[in-house]
Image (tube, rainbow, N blue to C red; front, side):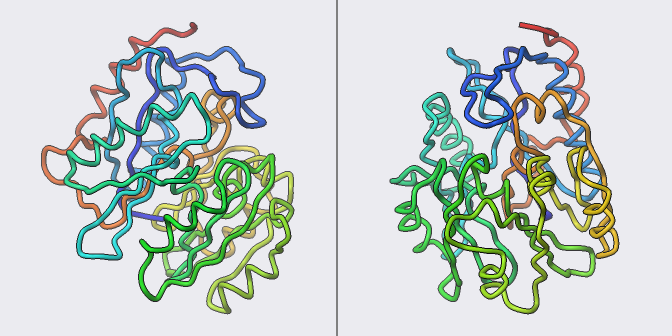
Length: 310
């Protein structure tokens, strides 16, 4: 992945509300200041790797929308027609359903037409572009299979799509599948086969073809969110805790590895770097857009005003 990413920082009362994945179910006490500072460190890593960040300020509403930082679930930008369309998610988790109207307004301000998925579907986290015109759609935990009826008409006319059912604790497709490309453009698809119901890594290999390597990820690395690493122009931003064996294999394949320890966001909230971004393919930031590079100093200062406990 490379380009422009939509991100939204945690608010001053950020906490674990839904407890809807195996990391967040303990509802650990949170430190909003540290969470914001970790978010900034991820933005810095993305910027160093050559990415650009479109910042969406969290709304001041009650109850607070603490899940908005996970913008991978906001929706997906499709460009299969002359008029780009941002398909907004239909969240299955009740405490996140209020996010949609704010993402809709943000997209409209950016000049994007929007529509809402009719079936439960949690956005970009459930749709992997694995190279060329091949897509993998996932469902089974947070999203349902009828959501494919919303997605298919928006893909390019020559697109090839496979849908895979996944199972807990892998709650989105981006927790068990990760297409990454090195600087030479070689694509590797990280895949944890045990997350799949009635399918396999071999079936994925058959679908993607010989031009893409499918690399199996074991359970320990998958649970450490290896498949939720974010690839920005050949730099792979990974959470800490990934095995030296996997890191070594990726370095040998031409990737630069940057590990980030984000215990507040990932250790308590769950997921990894990809959960916190929504790639806006083809979007170029215009002067005056709320981009991270121009807002960084303000954001650092704002984070220092956050409480350290709730």
